[in-house]
Length: 69
Image 1 (cartoon, one colour):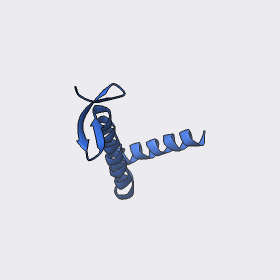
Image 2 (cartoon, helix red, strand yellow):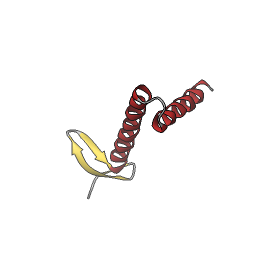
Image 3 (cartoon, one colour):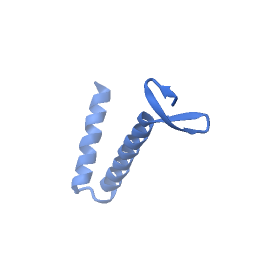
Image 4 (cartoon, rainbow, N blue to C red):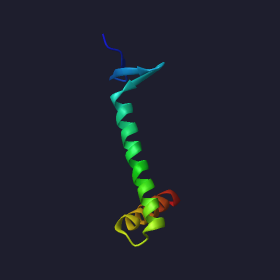
């Protein structure tokens, strides 16, 4: 029988830490958000008039307003 955590099948173990599909998906999503943030911040610095820089500024303003509210 395969061990389960909160009805999520354990795919493998990273030392004593069980790895589930939820954890893999969360890490992948976090890496995508981090990659976007790094690319957008670089675009704001190096190419301030680009579409990516504008998207980065819009995203930053949205998140800033969300936290302020």
